[in-house]
Length: 356
Image 1 (cartoon, rainbow, N blue to C red):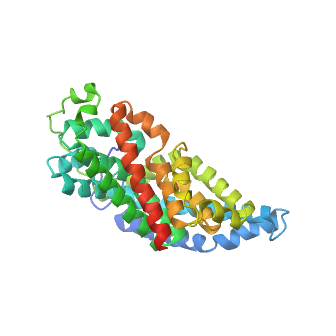
Image 2: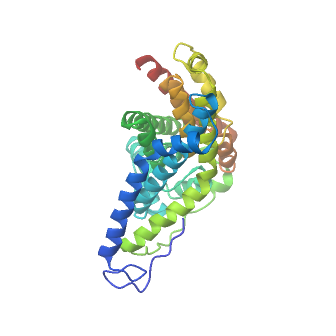
Image 3: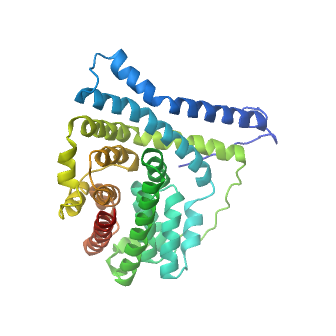
């Protein structure tokens, strides 16, 4: 995201000329209003469903509509808060800083650092090609580059924030831990396979720019503006997927019997984990769009390991991302990437179906 810092800003004032303490007061007030509205969402969704609309209580349609009217503002409010907060954190990171930090690191240490950086850096699968070129030409090892490219879209702040808000810290922590494991493991394996010669020739013939660019120094007011910019950009890009995901989750919640999901995606069915991966790969969504579906599946009796495998395959192995990566990778390297990541996802799915 491009950002232009505020100019001609007086010390102690924001761009609009208000004192900084007034901006802080407005922020605290906004958070309090957010908290009050968030607390009353269950009551509000029930009132809209059964008082404003002619829908009978305890009906399948009523359950679906109430789920939709409850989850839509809930997810959007969580998304707004998470993106704004992490947007400010992201203002401290740039692609140049990330590449410089990762270049020259030993493989395993680099894999770990790259996966951790992927959580908080502002990159998604649509940025895969320019990021890959920049990392490779800057001397970042291939396996380390893949650890970053796997973690950035899959184990990002939106996924973790929404999982925490909707399903609790335990599920969020499990997802973060297993996602980091897959990113580190897959990157390390790809690095061991020595497939550098399967990068497209035009990428390897590129040279990294040697000119250093002086970074603009941002004030805290600039970083707040950056956070608002992140909200407008990211929510503007994902809101339709959020609505579609919640609509799908509402249909599952209201109309799909609990026993059906338990039989198809339950831990007793050995084929449920690979089937969920196969179903997830052709789909195209992001964390914000798929998490409402995950919430509904878990509520209907699907096993946690199977649902985690489904979610990870949608985000990390989507067909559109493979098409994008084909611009810079030869088929053998793409095949190795899919095989290693899918193996890690299957391992995670079976592991959690066995222990939980």
